[in-house]
Length: 302
Image (cartoon, rainbow, N blue to C red; front, top):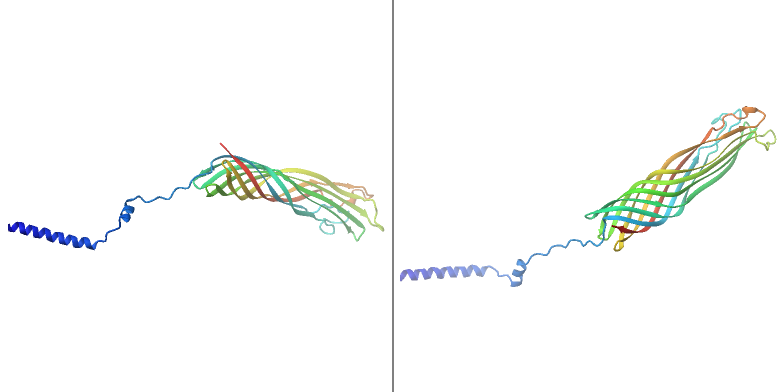
């Protein structure tokens, strides 16, 4: 009997202590307990709404600002009794200009999406027409005014079609919009003309109207130049499979020289002595480049 009473006393004590401890622990509301058991939401992955892998074919048009530079250090003819660069000098002839031309043409390429990055290769061809030209007439006297030389120059430089093969690297700012940089090799047609006529006249009071020596040339050329091009652009999807773009590029064909011969004649009474140091050729220094801003449309290819 005493053991039963002692056991009941111990159980009562444990129950009292347990109730006291439980009273010290705050009970969370039911909604908080449910929230703890519920799975936490994850950030949704971006939804892909535009295709950036595959081929592309399109066309663009815009404006090109073309820089043409033409320098003839000086074609010349010197009379007998003078020394070139001592008492007979050339007449420099040069010109440059920035012409604006409409430009239009097709492009095609392939690109591949890797996450938020898009890389690819692209080729294009564009037509434009930008020409710069100039003329110059001058006269110079030598040997204390006894000989008069007249110089007549004319020249032109024209840029027509251009093309390029470029790499493109860009990043998606949204699933349907791409900003990119591009660069590669450029090709372009550059043509030009040059004409020079230098004549020597005797000026033994007054100057003769008939020349006794001349140096002349009249040439034209057309070259396909190779250079480099770099730029940047923005491209976005207008409709499924149709993309629009805006792009700026700078293209440079570098400096180069064209050399042509001069035809020298001596018709005066002094025979071959009427010419001292005629210019045997003419070297023209050229520098051609252009800036282009264009917009275009393209379709995705399977």
